[in-house]
Length: 381
Picture 1: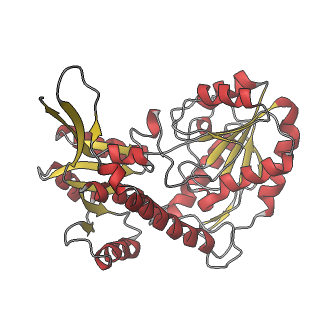
Picture 2 (picture 1 turned 180 degrees about the vertical axis):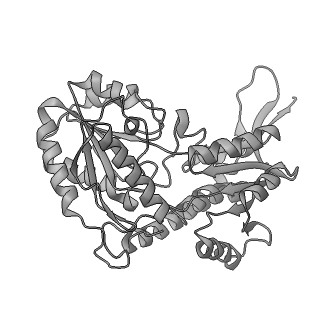
Picture 3 (picture 1 turned 90 degrees about the vertical axis):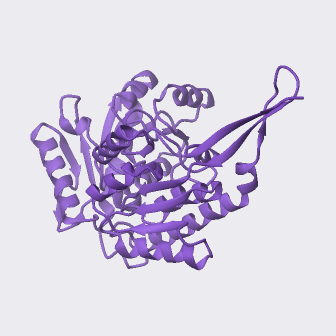
């Protein structure tokens, strides 16, 4: 999918860390949870597997996305059917071989090359107990519709348009560097990448100028080169879609501070300004190396703008005031808030969103609560 080599190697390491995390915590995940009861006897909640699960995974993180779905469910005793993105056939096959080579019983993890229509048939099969989707809103809605008709548990991890809020700083250059990293990570094709940069008035001009300059310094190049920061987008269709969004934004009155052009699937880092609520791009997710900068008067306006979206996945807050950080973190409508840092995902930290960004949590111990029978066992004295 065009991921730079350093990012690909890092993703594989992260996937391994995730699997190790769940192996290390298997006893904790599967242990009985005693309940303090009124009356005599005892009660526990015992976690039991649901059975066969279908995972429908995306192309942007071919190893990591699968690991965070499969690992906790295999620990619980569920078995996995995995439909990977059509453009990841070799990754899909490699992951199945890894589980086989590790000694997983036959049928524990099965890679499927199936169409969307065939996937719908699989979801409807009474042997399948649940389905997890990471992808677009459209894909999530389509799968949830089929799952709902068949009364199947569904977990959704969908898109995002994460705000990056700058309220105060003692080091504007480090904030700018973090902003560029958060936008260009994975060629800008990350659902929880920072996409909307919301900056208070007294810092806006300096931030916008330095952010634009630093974005303009990056050139999309060969993803197999060790020093490449930005590779191509995942497909010609993806590049065309992003170009259409940028062109439409400009036609509606947005200003391009840098970029806005492409050569094939290589898209120049792009920064838009003067975007208003009347423009389409105000509501859309830009899935590529394109950012929008907004000027706000203060904390209250920053939170209001951050929340003025149908998405609610992640968010980033930069401030030197700890009390302000707490207030803003409480006020943001998102599943995750990162304060004064970016790219800090880790196996023990739950990942997921609210609103149209999803309905579930992956990673961390919470991931083991999605597809499990929390069975009550009450015993008399």
